[in-house]
Length: 292
Image 1: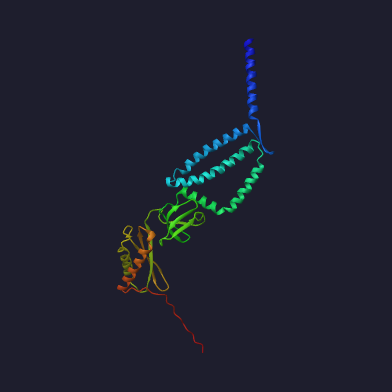
Image 2 (image 1 turned 180 degrees about the vertical axis):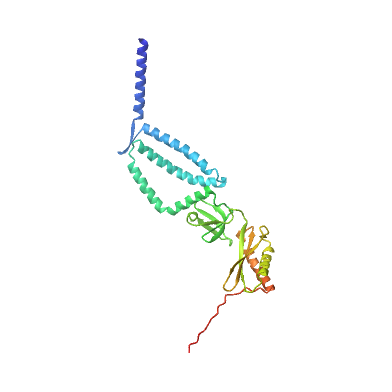
């Protein structure tokens, strides 16, 4: 009998402790007239933030596993800004799900984000494009790129812009959003070797086999032209005033291809003169009809 009374007393005590705990957790804290939050809600919010932090850490490791160490710092800066934005969204959604009236906060946040987004649209595009560049590694420092007809060697990749140097030693600052809206040519992504060409026309009646021999000679004797793959000559067309050829050769530094191509043109002109090969100019026949 005494043991039964003891069990009943323990159950009553446990019940009172549970009720006190729930009363404590359900105690509300008012923030103004419209926002009221309980201690249990605060614990739920803390748990949601902790889970979000864990997920963000895993996501950061996945996104940065292929990024070079030199670029991880740049990515972490942008990631830090997005992380706080995600925290804010999770906080508001969690508060709303536990019954806290955050409609006014949502409305103010939406209006603020729309205003900031419209004012800084291009800036956000540049930063997002910079993040994409860091993640997919489509452009590296040292690459030779061509965009919007401009060619430069990449010297530095920042979050908003890419800095490149042209062959004239001029600094080319490229907003990163241009990578999303324009075609980008990476000359050196497959290696430093590139195929270049020089086009020339000769007069009708010229010995085309001799022309081919002289063109190959002009390319093979230049020190910057690589022998493997060997130069080639293409007979491209029968033009209006000339037989058109294209000399194709390989260079190891396409960034300075302008100079070898100029040297080869000088050599072609010299060889053609020595072998009586004429480079014609456009000719037109004019018929004058005289009215009597």
